[in-house]
Length: 134
Image (cartoon, rainbow, N blue to C red; front, side, top):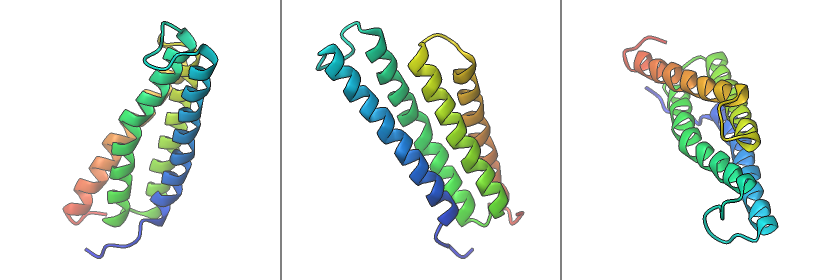
């Protein structure tokens, strides 16, 4: 196995980084607007912003790590792009859904489903690559 620079995954890492920054800014803006320094102060919009940011922080890193490993281990570039595109769209859908409501919604369900799909598919790609199957 020859390790290479995971340039495809780097593209999606950059896009996810921008989304993470936007979610952080959203929390800050909501905190300033609500004049709440810690927790959510019972302000629904702030609670939603915090949850959207936390959900991103919980899900995006492990999925991105799996995509990087899949690429480095030789998964076909088209497949790595599919993983990245699905992950970015899923995390965006989840962020939109969580910023609208903390209840179940189609964007949240799409985001969760897409992220889980990437976690499973990238994990399988890694296992296949480790077994010599690309």
